[in-house]
Image (cartoon, helix red, strand yellow):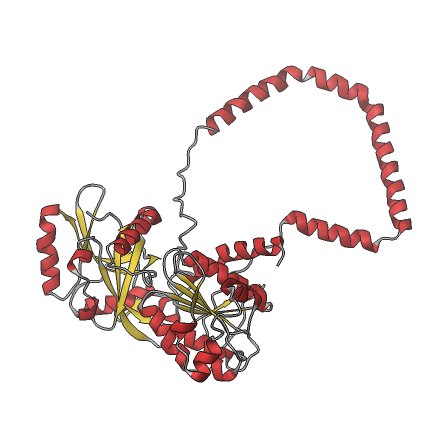
Length: 459
């Protein structure tokens, strides 16, 4: 690929990376499978900074993935086809391609892999669930025209189109698509100008040149004819013009003192999303059994403690209980959520709550250094919403309050506010719709579900 193509690949990866935040298995495809493979590889390198990522070649020796593996003549040639057709272990075929050992490529193997027997294999569903359980990401580069492609997307849970100007429609499959940016205006004008010039013959261009010269001559004559009048008006209004200029400079000076707050910067190595890539159960109106679920503190939207570290998904509440040393880190939330692929309830455990993604990065590093989160798990999520249980507490009253909520079966955590008081929350969610499962549980326990933007900090 040319350097220009590589520049496009990197730009496209940066643009699409936020769509994969919170995803664990995604099919990557497009009209140009080579471009799709290159973008998938770049996306893996972006997300490899925070979690383990595997890219599977379901095209067949597609150039970018083949070059990334850089296999020699004596290397093991086995790949996806050998695993699915002959039972070779996936762990054996996965090839690390980065120094940290967090990004892997699974080559196509010794036989054709773009087959219905491979694409529609039920095993993909189990693999997707496994990647979700450890917080890792599986990217499947595939060909859309192969029979079984739609089944593959359903097993994975989502499709990420590359190089598409319009969102493809694919049955019940979730499509992670955002419109590409339009061409720069200058480029559009250049293209249109080139088309116009090419369509003109020499006679047309000559006629336009003569017409332009005649118009210019007419303008020059008109200026010369009216020059005395213009000269008189110019000098007669010079003084009033100076006064106007002075007043304008004062307005500009005052305007220059206005200040606007800087937006929080997110490090390039972290892919954090505003939740554009959500399952059907996470989107739409947030309604509980007793009515709509609305945010009670919209005025706090500018100071949300939304960045958290994904710890684990568990099948039961008992399995979700974190160890004591992790719980001591603060803002440990256990949130019941539905898996959009098969509508299964999971208990998602996240740690921390910060207004800056750098805080979440530092926390993830601490967890990995302590061995609490391995290199195969852990990622950074944007979780703005939670349910407020109590507020205005003194720090000394927090342990007793949390104990009372625990006796009622509610897993609470505390965040200290800017005024020194403490607010207790339960759950942490990406959207209000995702929070309805816990809202119904709170209502059944006789607790009004007060959905709010999470604010404050751990202590």
